Image (cartoon, protein in one colour):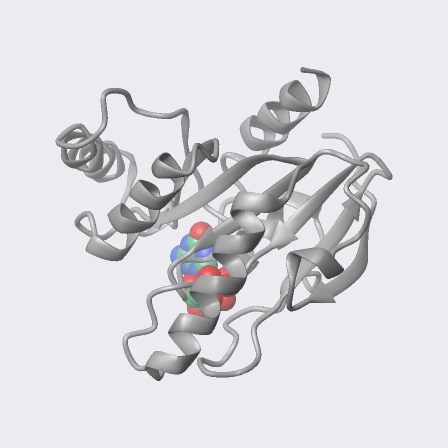
Amino acid sequence: TKLIEAKFVTSAADYRKCPPAEKPEYAFIGRSNVGKSSLINMLVGNKNLAKTSQTPGKTQLINHFEINKKWYLVDLPGYGFAKAPKGERDKWGEMIGDYLVNRENLMCVFVLIDVRHEPQRVDLEFLDFLGEKDVPFYLVFTKADKVGSVKAEQSVESFKKTMLLSWTKIPQYFITSAERRTGREELLKAIEELNLS
Ligand code: GDP
């Protein structure tokens, strides 16, 4: 396993305030509590890089990390807080929507899905948004250790089936566990390949 050098760069409330778009960039997003911080920390081998379980309603920002001086990893605020006030949700939508649509060096969005759950409307709506805007994305099923590999595969199949109701093809996907550190090599390899493209 390659050693990873990760450095915090900025927290921005606006894509225009993000670092210069001169390196390929990969954004991680998902419902709150999906395991995003744990996955990011697992990927870069640093337990504390991304802060786990941010409190709802707290200021949520676009966090840039520079990896191996070569690419940016972006930690985006989670969506799907039923309890967050509508104003907060609108602000989230505008900030993240603008970022996703306008960030020119954004190579791919990794959309995290909790493998334990049935397909959730917020996730599907978010994927539809990416599709409408032509933003490339991969799926990352998280917390696989919580269900075991058979159930994980079944859950992925069920998600694919639901997706195929409105999509013509299924994007590349990964099954991961931050707990067991599975899926790490595959994710890093996918990023490496896009970096070379
Ligand atoms: P975030 O809000 O999306 O950043 O989610 P966190 O990374 O803070 O994780 C939310 C909760 O799920 C925490 O209690 C984590 O310990 C737990 N968690 C995250 N990833 C995994 C995983 O791969 N396996 C297990 N068993 N628990 C996980």
